[in-house]
Amino acid sequence: MSASRYTYLGPAGTFTEAALRTLPEAATRELVPMVSVPAALDAVRAGEAAAALVPIENSVEGGVTTTLDELSAGEPLMIYREVLLPIAFALLVRPGTALTDVKTVTGHPVAQPQVRKWLAAQLPESVWESAASNADGARLVQEGRYDGAFAGEFAAATYGLEPLVTDIHDAQNAATRFVLVGRPARPAAPTGADKTSVVLWLAEDHPGALLELLQEYAVRGVNMMRIESRPTGEGIGRYCFSVDCEGHITDRRVGDVLMGLKRICRDVRFLGSYPRADEVTASVRPQMTDSAFTEASDWLTRCLDGRA
Amino acid sequence: MSASRYTYLGPAGTFTEAALRTLPEAATRELVPMVSVPAALDAVRAGEAAAALVPIENSVEGGVTTTLDELSAGEPLMIYREVLLPIAFALLVRPGTALTDVKTVTGHPVAQPQVRKWLAAQLPESVWESAASNADGARLVQEGRYDGAFAGEFAAATYGLEPLVTDIHDAQNAATRFVLVGRPARPAAPTGADKTSVVLWLAEDHPGALLELLQEYAVRGVNMMRIESRPTGEGIGRYCFSVDCEGHITDRRVGDVLMGLKRICRDVRFLGSYPRADEVTASVRPQMTDSAFTEASDWLTRCLDGRA
Image 1 (tube, each protein chain N blue to C red):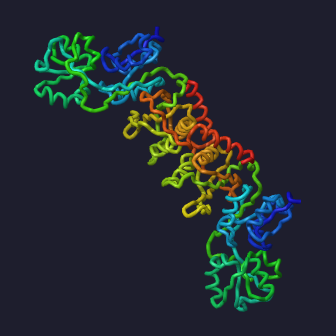
Image 2 (cartoon, rainbow over the protein chains, first blue to last red):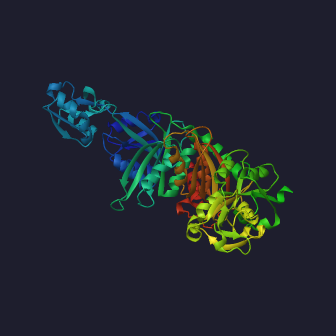
Image 3 (cartoon, rainbow over the protein chains, first blue to last red):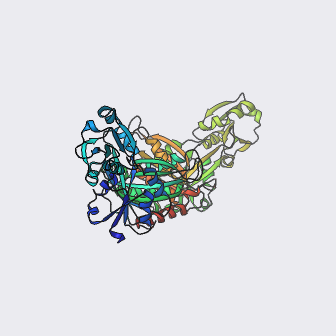
């Protein structure tokens, strides 16, 4: 039953699964690991799953640019919510292994920079070899190919391993952002701490085009949280922009920004308004509240009627 | 009967009267010269006149800053239309006077820079003395106090004088802009070649406040035609801005600018949308037409409904 199924970037036992399990509704869903971000999303597009959880930012397991590109191309999808997962690795070993026994270690290639300093300090003699995923690395330790795998602590039980060391992360406050993606729908009601995502294609590549885009946000006091350019595949110098901003599409200032972008851009894809994982309430200047918009609109009506 | 009366900056025989007489409806109105711009406008505020014609820009007879200040203070007024009058002086003399007889000349102080070069070339020996107005200068010539007066050619008949030389103007294309001012009313229908005037008071005197104001126009592709700062009388560094832009309040892009200004400014006074005297059609980028606004608004509705 597709409505009860969520796909995610597999394999089982990765940070993506851990992120998915932080969602309350995950307990009542069939969670299906997929081999890639496109596969996870295509299952949603085909109606075989209600939603898919995929990494979108600062991932330790890849998939970020793939996710951005998937959301900007093909059948439209929408972000329903986001999950922030702090990144901390455990060194998983077969039961009974001591730290001095660990000569070879493995993990996903993007995990390596996150544990490099720890390795240099604690296991300077060890040899690193990359695995297809952190979970795959754990499986290879289970099979005896390596002595230790860097993965989430949650992966230990799946592969009959033990976490020898936990909370390993070179960067403080490292986190990966995941998004739960479904088919386009009416956005969830605003919570006061929301985020709105779009993909923008510039109408003309003229000097100042990017500035014009930024001004649409700035002039309505809407904070831009993230902007990334991605090649569109239409040739050198042709980009689209993936942009997150504070606020919800039903906030007047955000709706106004979106309409402004729609006018000046060749195309705008609305990717959704959803609760911020960090639950930080948007900072709104008093000039940009819904009531300021309503008052300005009422005043314009009075001007038009000769009653200003 | 106040509805049939127009006041104007007097005295009779000045460029302001000439400008007023270019309006077709002036033929059916009682035209009443007033001693000053405030007097002309106060007659309108008091309901004693339907409208007043006063100079607002590049005047050869003064009154410009007075007009700007009058429109920004006191009971609100509205600009109904504007008149552009090319500035060209005639040298008015008593009948029979030859150019070689002209030893003393007069006129309004602001006329003098407009005729200085001509005087230096044609009457280098003549002596200039200022009069209270160009028309007053003509009267003083009639009374024999001076030999010649610089005034509009149209003033000759009123004072029994003859235009000895016409079309005197040092600056090419010199013109004065006058505005017909009445009480607030529903603005005239758009003509496609319109102008919208406002007075703006900044909410906070922070760096970038003026830039924010300009951005409200720029972000909607609305051309600003004139901006002048005027002290508000609240102390050094406190200004308001008198701004004209292309377009009509019923143009979606202009209405959007006005609402944006209303939100960020401490106060906005709408001074009217009225036909441009130069009849130049506004240049509107395709992204900023009414239909572009309507399409963007329809798209936002679809996003809100999950149908984008």
